[in-house]
Amino acid sequence: MKKDVSKPASACLFLAALAVIATGIAACGSGGGEDLSAWDHDPIVPGYSMADVNIGDPFQAVLDIHGEPEQKLKDGGYLYAYYARTREGGRIDDPASWRMVVTLYDNGNGYLDAEDEVGAIEVSTPYYGTTSGGVGIGSSPGDVEGEFGPCESISETQGPEGENIQLYYYDQKGVEFLISPPDGAITVLVTAYGGLRPVEEEEGTDDAQGGLFGVYSSAPIVPGQTAAGINVGDEFRTVKEKYGGPDSTGSTTEGLVFATYTGGYGTWKMNVYMEDMDKNDSLGDFDIVVSISVRHPYEGKTPMGVGIGSPSADAMKEFGSPERQTSLMHQGEELTIMEYNAKGIVFAFNSASGAIVEIDVNRPLTQ
Image 1: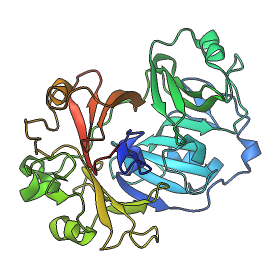
Image 2: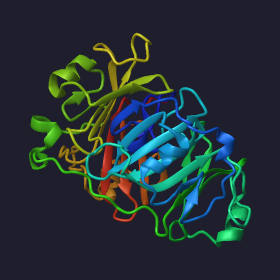
Image 3: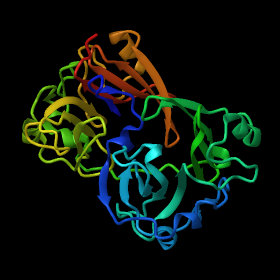
């Protein structure tokens, strides 16, 4: 979940798995093997192609046109290649920070290589190609619906500056538009007809025993205080004593540093956010925990028994109506986020099933 540290560690989850990382972010070259003007006028063909990349191409075809990506990411069973950073310091999931992102299906080895298959192409402003009906970056919701028809799947979230953003999702037509009301479409995503194929993550052999969480797999959740055996206010060296070194680390544009734990496979299972005490944008032993985010297979519960997999209604029974509730679409899954920031806890649940998929314990906000 994205942390808003102007209100310490408030969360809005855009997008958790992408924002604060699963496994393997790495610098991988300067990117942009061809001058941008040679591809940023390519037509947008829903279901087929964009930016001189075709759905179903091997990653080698992307390399031939665009060169090595600036960053790579493995998350949710998919692989991502990021090209042409447009804003320094922006989050990896921020549409304003990259001109192109390619989503690929892993061929089974867990690494981005030449044989991986293109599943989606995403471009952001500035991009000058359009659909056959003239829709592209800058187009209004009316323009989009004028060509593709009324959108039955629209979700809302907040952008990096707190602005409202809407996702127009035409999965059966193989195209999505992220629209900021003042600016029109700021991002276009092309997939095959029907959207991205679901993929299965590699499962760890010790998952049933709590995997990453070990003896802390059932440690209680106390809002504003603790989860997974980690306390708000702990130093990072205490986290390391319990969980060892993280799988990846980094810093946020809001001034936090984070440690990501995957348990050795798949996407992140725990993210720990910390106040950067020495202000060096690097994780250190004496940085102070302000938020703990947990997912499956963590089995800890709140005082009234709410945990990962619980119905969202149970959270409302225990904590009442949320202070804020928002929805967003991520990889074809609609998520709803319930924030109880004054109490120091945030829940994200699958909007269709109502099951909680993520819990954040945060430093409580005071009025």
